[in-house]
Amino acid sequence: MNKSSFFSGGLVLLALLFLYAPIAVLIAMSFNASKYNRLPFEFSTRWYQDLFQNEALLAATWNSILIALATGIICVLLATLLVLGAQALSRKMQRALQSATLMTLTVPWLILGLSLLLMIRALDFSKNLFFLLAGHVVIALPYSVLALQARVQSLDPALEEASGSLGAGPLTTFRRVTLPTLAPAMVAGGFLSFMISFDNFVISYFLAPFGFTTLPIEIQSAIKFGFTPEINAVSTIIIGISLGCLAVAGLLLELGVSQPGKKNNRSQFLLDVSAPKQYNKT
Amino acid sequence: MGAKRRLLALPGVSVILIFAVAPLFIMLYYSFQGDSQGAGLTLENYTRFFEKQFYLSLTWSTIKNSIFVTLVSLAVSYPLAYIMAKKLKGVRNIVLVLIIIPFFTNQLVRVYSWLIFLQDGGILENVLSALGIINGALGLLYTRAAVVIGLVHAFFPYMVITIYLALEKLDNALLEASASLGASKFETFRKITLPLSAPGVAAGLLLVFVPCLGTFVEPRILGGVNGMVIGTVIEDQFFRIYGWNFGAAVAFILLAMVIVSVSAFSRLGRGGSLE
Image (spheres, rainbow over the protein chains, first blue to last red):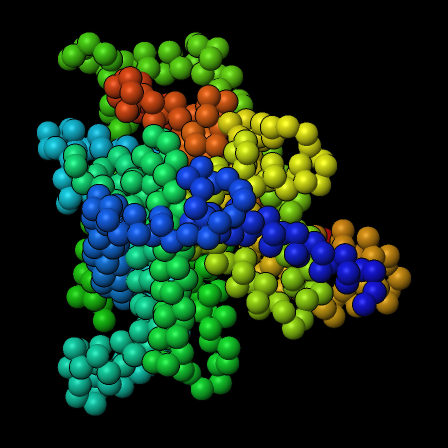
């Protein structure tokens, strides 16, 4: 090993250390008996036991999952229709649509959340689940759209026309031709929107109705009102769930629609999934 | 195809118009409302912001902070992305996956993990004391430095990915040609690698700088009283002081800053090409 590659390797390791050290400490502390995250380390599963008796935290977790599921499903449906419809639009309209989608990515969530809050006030409503869900859909939708957009371009219009001229109705064509092509991107897009919603604190913080909490809101109030080690435990579980979802989504893609000639689907999936986050490149 | 198919876009477009665009206009309306009811439109919220030294210096320190976080991220990301694209072979995909995974961890969980990592009597203090680097309390939590650390951690992976994707596309033959024509390594880097990676760098700068301008979670939790930024001022106006109209005006000033930065960075990205 020469000096330059030793240096390169060291730099990569340092960056990964910076990225993972605090997360590793968090996970370790969730198994530590100390109430104040102090050393020496003494193994205990006490905080996990406490966690499963903490009704408020469990209810918040359930709320987060439900909201994220609803957001994911709504976003995939809207985004699929949106990209299919956009194909029939003029260039100019397509570009306008693209800017509108990117706008919701660029405007800080703080501003989107507050403006929705003001809209609720202007309409003289009180905060409710409908607007909470609407807020989540607005911030998660662009991720589904960008995931689908890349895929829809690989859709060959000739195939749809051929299917039509062979006597298939529009629904049959959609089911047999369009859907199979879009399916991987729909999984990726739905997964992204689910995660954006599940992790979101800002929108929920502004729009959650009184008495309704989500997991990030519970974590925030635990931070605000003193440390509780149960938060270490719940955070560790969230990290586990996130990684599990990521693995499942990647695996589904590989099993369901393995394309001949396209190797290494799993890391491609990761790039697909992170690609929408580089929004201004598109 | 045609007219009927176009209608498919309608639900998605309506959602964006009703729940993202319309609320911004409502917010704009509020920002021109005075404190007294029914007094008509007024500029007083904006003049209040621009007349008070406090808000101006806060704006400046938010911008400075975001620039600093962005530069630190660039210093970390460019070498890392370069190594990943040009040096690592076998483990490249593993490193890529490890860089991407934190995208899918909760923002608050990450901030909270820094909180317990940096706190006095925490792990970092233990490690540094054991190594004899510090003596006594670490005193890092609730400072500007803690906020910078948290923000760099939150956003630099985006920059690594955008720069990596730009560098990966760069044709090695170009570099070899440059070397064989007698250019030094530095010259090759300056004249070929750097300009061709400019779009990735611009995208990365944008992806770090813009979220930094609008954040309030990291500054609030890691910075404590030292973590005041525009975002926390807006949050306070809405949740503690109930100055909704003034808060709406500050939010619009923040939005203007975001729009200016986005257009500046995308111009920078387009400028990237070989001379």
